[in-house]
Amino acid sequence: MSTPDNFLGKALGELGPFTGLYALDIVDGVIDDFAPAGREDLVLRFARPAPLLVVEGLLGMDERYAAGIGQAVPALLGESRNSERAEENLVRLIRQLVVEKQEGPGPDLVSWMLHYAPDGQHAAVERHIRLLLLQVVAEATRRIGWALHDRLPGPGETRAAADRRGLPVTGHGPVGDRQALARLIADSAVERLLFRLPGMHLSIPAAGVRLAPWGGVDCCPELLPAAFPPVRVPYTGNEEVPWLPAPIFTTVPPRSR
Image (cartoon, rainbow, N blue to C red; front, side, top):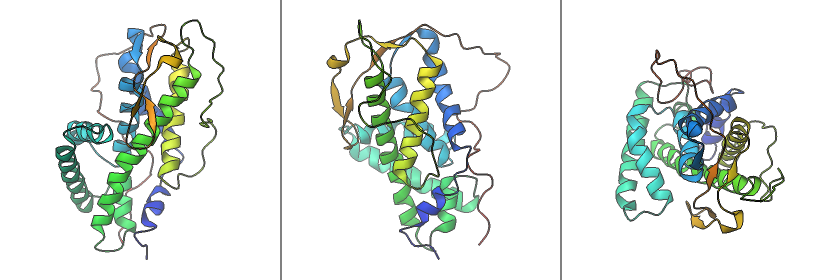
């Protein structure tokens, strides 16, 4: 029987080879929102929202959670003055999610955590959901911010593609812990952005980028204003665009025990 110390690892072990593609699908949606503009702040519009959306999808959240989670998590990571209310809202939404997944498991991390957790360990499941939302999002945001800071040239600068903060983009093996999940999300996001928007550069010198605390993980860039050749994103207008793509990271809901 699993213990509170290993059921998260077992749940993460259910993430299949399509997890990276799922992350890319969400990242593409975030890029689509600002690609036609030709300029954007890559922290506020990319490094922060992309990881949060990916983690929400992996946890099996739907659009009913979008507004609440989208306000609570950034407020807690950014040390908002409303952090107490944000924490209360986050706890309430996590408990609601756990109850829903108990009643109707799906192909998502919460359902698999409930499957592997010992009976009666719902509080431990809720704690791990909170850590996934806060720690993974904070670490992925930090990695994306520093990778773009280090790889994008500022005005009149040239910048090698090497990353000076130890964030190499390599192949990923199994996602065994929160750190590995954060790396997968960050690496996927950075490479997709640079692939889709070539010619991107910072609008200010990299040395002039100010730092801000984010989630207590370390400082990360506060703003990364960037410019790039605008890219037109085709829309047919005939289909309803979902809040998040359908899950493909695990193949089936948990089996009955």
